Length: 262
Length: 223
Image (cartoon, rainbow over all chains, first blue to last red; front, side, top):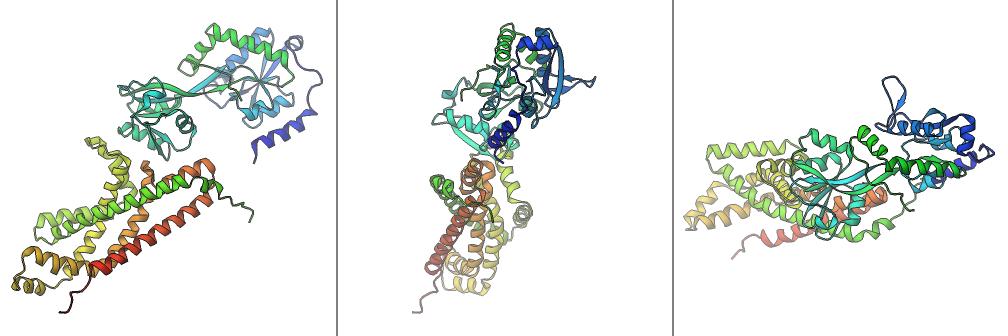
């Protein structure tokens, strides 16, 4: 089914249910609590901890925002399909819910500046110096056919770089381990697998191909709340707090977070 | 049926399909040529009367005929680097296809050679032909004539088997088709077109084999 059309239909249905007046930081302070939708099944961003409470990178950020408003945080677990409807119908005030900033969603909700993200990067033989696409000449790069890495790499790869397209991730990794390719596309999760396979001494991380960034979502009329949230994110990034959280939860530094242009 | 056929994404990609088909033809032709030479050598090895050689060749044939081609391809491409032999996808594909096809055609050619009556060899020697002449004119030619249809069938199978080497990223026809499919999701249309291309290539090879048969395997002129 058409994703955009389904969301637009949803938007139509939700319009009637919207609260009459736009929410502002002041109105939230006056109410004494902020209701934030979070995920609980997307580690390490949103999980349930040992005490069966929501926890994770996103949840920690949600609590920080509530603290800064000086109100209680009411965390509502949401799921992938229902999170935007929850926001649009006013069941939550904002979503800190591992929401990637993509054009389809940006039509429906207002995204804050990115607060988190993960990089897809090139990974390969340690002895190779690969700082950017220009260094790929003469090298062989294995990717799963037509996935996001393939598409991003195909755009930047110079003539003289050989891209080998395999059926799936496992064939790509096998090709790297057996030395049939010099480099592969890799994400943070894949990296852990490769290190288990003994890749730590042989391979290292090269340059980032692209960064998928996540934003806090609000309704489009919550302009003052959006401005306030962006200010908080800027400050948390500048102070190094978000990077510290990313190191703790995800295990690496935050990649460069840039608001995508659509 | 509610499926809307749309062949335009397939035809837009005709160039990569053509490149893929060309590589398929080259892979098949090279593998056939090398495979044929290897099988003739192995067939003679089997009939040489040297026991260890016969047993070694038998073991190879049994091993290859009782394991899947895909596994053999993975072994050549992913396995051989462990002992320092690193082949490009195209080369690995040819090596695997030759290893595979030779196992089948060796037995076919052995049967052909055995179909030549011993008395003919003796007759040849008695007529003063050299060993090479006996081999070429009295053994090889009649042997091939006897089993030629089986060999061509085997080579058509080989042509179609090349589709499997897409698994090691050799850019042949199936690999290109899968790539176009991953981008456009027009699976049905793509595989219809690819099936037609394979069919045409197969008919083309059959025609070449038929032409070769009428040229190479003539009977001696009755002077």
